[in-house]
Length: 253
Image (cartoon, rainbow, N blue to C red; front, side, top):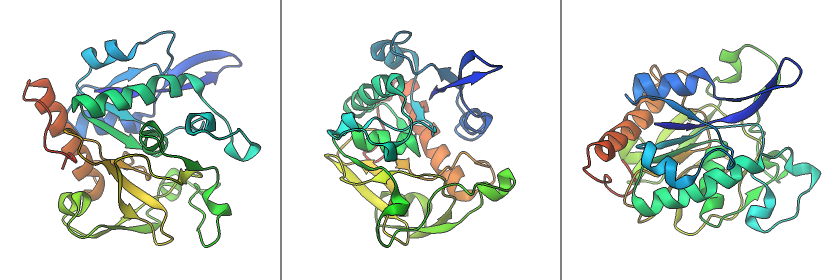
């Protein structure tokens, strides 16, 4: 399972490609796959090579945002920091996975990447919109406090997420600043927060797993029943692809 990484700098200039151990643990222990951290740098990896190497892809969260030029808007200070290298890898990778039926699971930034890859756009700052809550991570506190369940997500009655979860409503954490403005082509918004912010999507008509969520299910994925169902479904889809069984049913549930 390819885990899309983010660039980091440590020790005053030592650059690395990294991913949180909660991502690798969720993939290995809940999805049941071998986690491989992929450098999101088009100078180092090519989409075609990644598709041959991995049975599925986890699009992780990250502090840098998708550059607004990817959805036809100008850069402003409100858009924050960017990672153009990751944009160059993940956006075509998502489109290829959707076409092939190869499993792809987007989390937070990854959720936003799926929407942009399919032609959608993003709000630069959700909390600035009238009637919206602050979805950002609390600035202080322990990791447990930062990743605490903070709001409900309501799913479409009878929809893909409702069927997977066995419930039309779940509690989730929330640690994001941006969010979906215009939904991309075939992007089905299947879950929303109480303020109507999109929180759960899939690609309509895609032959494989395309479920993506705005929250962070990798946190305590083995203990939280909502997170466990997501990663187990993702793992089943990757296992089917690896076995040459082709993609699972559309929506990936």
